[in-house]
Image 1: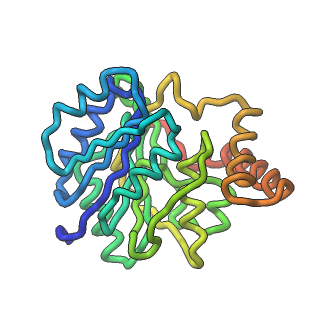
Image 2: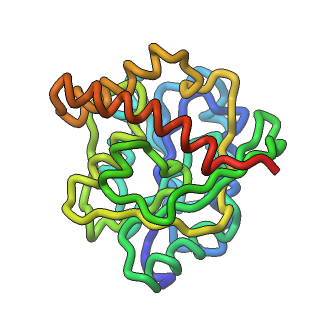
Length: 256
């Protein structure tokens, strides 16, 4: 299995305080056949200096000509990917050393094309917040439209099964948009590897901490502008997302 390349997609923007730890968590992987594609969206901090420290030839560092947002940045990285597998790691999140090895074995041994894992939450100082996040054992198309149960930092999919994924330029929920593109393929189902293999960093400036109206609009834009659903259907899915978001926290987020 070591001969199958994994392309890791890492967009960056002003994460100079965190990106070194994220890169190191990739370097520490027990599975060694990977390429890390970092695309920087015109950072104004010391991201360039931090990334330049790493001389590993498996790390590719690209820069946008102008600030373009996460959707365009991820699209660019995906076009550069050469691997049989695609994985995602934001430039402030972390992986456990066994993440790639265990997940690829899980998918290969079971014939899966799309999977995700459990993870925990940390703060800006990398200290645990004592929150463990799981999900349904399987996520079919219906569940995916109800709510995005899959953590971006844990997802992996086969390029042979899904090909090149590109999404429309939306400011928020562009990670969710990637998964909706995967579910355009008939019969798509994601499978949960029940292992804690990643750490999601909760930041004070996180775009996910929106108020209700902004969050609802971001879901509406996702389904209407990106997924091309009619306004009525987009409102329906946005409502379901808000409802199932509450259920997810109660059922799949546990304090320890």
